[in-house]
Image (cartoon, rainbow, N blue to C red; front, side, top):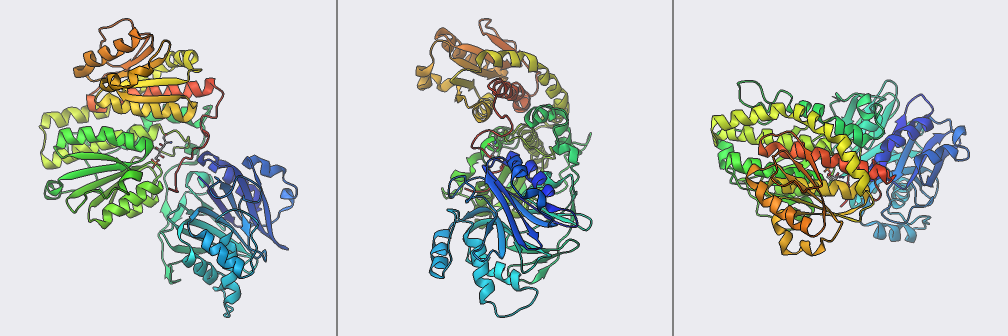
Length: 613
Ligand code: M6R
């Protein structure tokens, strides 16, 4: 999705803006641009294509301005082109604007502005914003220091949809204005300089101190001051947050790709997720929850709502919560939940999982449950992200910044956090034996070492990847909890290798999909539940009989020896096995993507954080 960077300070803005954009590249984009305040007015440099092309634009080195805004665009309205790239100017070239999000009523606003003499040069929804600002600025008869802010406020009142907006103006050459609604934007505070970004990692090398804007709040920045205003332009106070991620956490640290680095970071990421939540010989410690037995006993239903990989984490969490706590759990895709009038009331606990904390559908699903009086709990990796500010309660995965579009360490830390949460609920509710709780805790604490062992499958997986990287279709099979791992393995493969793949509950095979199994097709299976070994093996035999190449990821002793490749992973308690068994499948999609020469970290058409519907 689109990315925003802003700088206001004492240094030349353009190199800082471009280096910020380079750090946002992972979000996905098709064009890039910057705008700075120069002595003779506002500069605009933009084009379709990569951020690094900006370095070659004529005149870019001549820019001297110390205030600027920048943008990577992921096309929604209008094809990728120079005209459609941001920043956009108003007709009088007095206001320069970048925008993330979608203006749903842009057509009406455009018609209104055309009727008032404005001309449009792009097909974007964004171009209405600078012109609306100009419209209100020219109608305002009061001439004071808030005049530009009032114009931005009036324009925002007309906008329907989602936005994070940066504005610079020749009428306010020492300031920048930013505003957000349902779209991410953070403000980084430096010494005699301030930064804007769509996410924290992009500007971590400049500062670890951040202000987080709420929806419909404005900030007016100068190099050494930031004033915050609500929608009615009353001043508001904000706390400065210190983020304890260090800048190197957002670097590749010698790895070829972020994805590989993040796969190998999983043992430590999980140590951070466990943190002090499992103290020895004491109950689980969730500082920010403190749920009572009375409260948890009043919960008769749990929804876990998320998208993509985060939803797969939820599927695994469901099994542990149901088994340990005896509360029914429904896992829902956020974009479905929000439109299907789910049965939710004050006795429902809704858990929302989002690595980025900015996924539009997940946030909308959370708001819906809140409006129906449910208790809402967010699980996120990003401190202060939008979802954490909407939810009644938040717990963080603490996995460190995840840059690669394909989610790996965030997934395993989400699964482990859901398992710790299940243990915590069970302790409070006394819904399972203390022996069970003790065993779960022990298994959780051993997991980082087990993942270290699972990572040792890397070479064997690379060999298999070399054999199958040209495949057109791959099947993933699993039963019970292993079906969830099959779903996640299949999603990883699709995302970064562009190989078509399907995940099936192994028992479903005979009900249709087996018709697709033909000589030479690759079938990957996961077997970690000792009670289901024979059942899944029977299904694997059925595909072997029809000529399939097979790979099995397992922590069990398998009876059959005609499987092509068996990848052994360490044994653990069945609820936790997805955390270990997914590791070889993450590596498999990584090595296939590399073998095909694809961009592992930035797969086509995908964005790291999906901030629009
Ligand atoms: O930031 P979120 O966890 O809310 O993102 C949800 C999905 O968009 C995300 O998990 C997506 O499926 C990943 N690219 C999967 O690797």
